[in-house]
Length: 69
Length: 182
Image 1: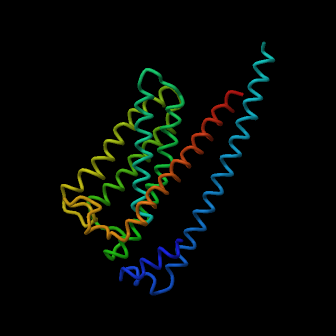
Image 2: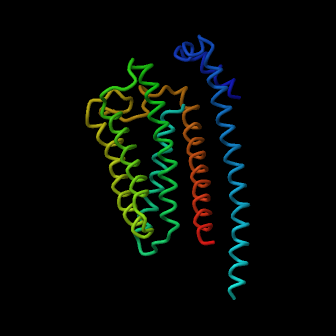
Image 3: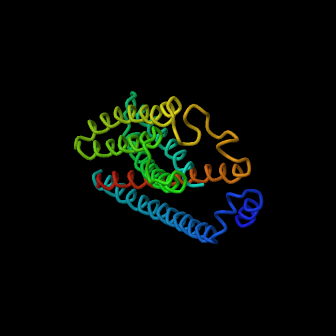
């Protein structure tokens, strides 16, 4: 879909023609996509890890409270 | 479709921080609001710095210089420095309650400065930047209609990513606070 949008833009605007002329626009788009997907995966993994650690800390806090009682 | 969405996302995050600071100063004084304000400013700063970098690259291509003496550009730099001051202020105060109150007050002023420097002042002065120098942004001159179908989804996408990053940062900060209780 991204490719279709980029090709459409290339057809309708000369400015895009300039950017695509050197053939580097696709590389830039590809690199940007890889960075974005990588960031998304990293955030997803971090969110899971924090949630797991949160559960663990809650268990520890609960056990400490029970010991005090 | 990187530069403008970066600033939109920064505005959103600083707005979240502004609301959190108001709530921090209100009767509740919950530590969660302080954590929210801090997390939103931290992530907002990242977007602000990326906005400056992408803007500088764009300026080099469009105006032939990495930086020009323009109210919009200088205002953006000052805004980022003001928020850097917020983070420095937080790092210099040890007392938790005092830190929360001081930084909340500072954050209120920082957000007002952000609005004045980035949204008000450049419209009243001559500016090279599109959408500034008196003319409202996003008109047919500044943004071609064909670009809107990429621009608006990009703005929404970056904002969602910014909020996601903010939530992860907030969760990490809350976890850190819990760990200190152990």
